[in-house]
Amino acid sequence: MKAEKAEIGIKETNRKAVSEMLQQILADEFVLYTKYRNAHWNVEGSDFHTKHVFFEEEYGKLEIIVDEVAERIRMLGVYAPGTLREFIELSQLDEKKPKQNDSVSYMKLLLDDHQQIISYIRKSISENAEEHNDEGTADFITGLMQQHEQMAWMLRASVKTFK
Image (cartoon, rainbow, N blue to C red; front, side, top):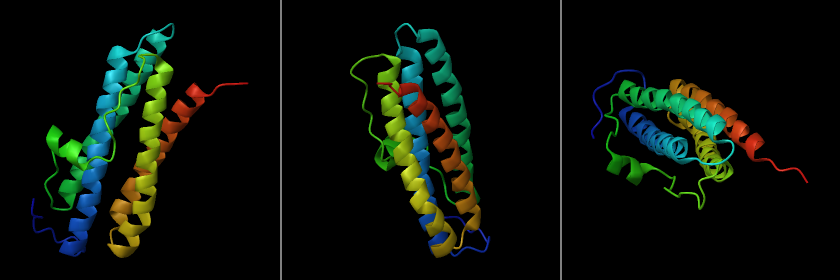
């Protein structure tokens, strides 16, 4: 959708570019949120209860992130995508399901998704600050990246095997 008139010191073309980047992040966050829900609902095994609770805690964090990203898009004067079709079209993540419903299988898939999001955000930080004159969004997505790094670390530590 067309950007609204938002006189915030960022040219319209830059706001459009930043909002497109944020729309992908929003879609990725929503897809990841859904994948955590799936893991929460369907995980099985001897660690069921602890992982059921863990996945719930993590999707709770993502629910807040989804809302914050959508609101950041609106701050730039652009309408946020809000349909499942839009999220699937915009997201870089796929809807892979694990072959088994054990916690490790779910965590490995979720870890891959976090790492993709981290990589995308990392390359977008300087682009937002330097090319698009939007230090606010660069700072905002830096915080998102840090949250994903922590979530990825938890998953990575959980799936580590010792030899």
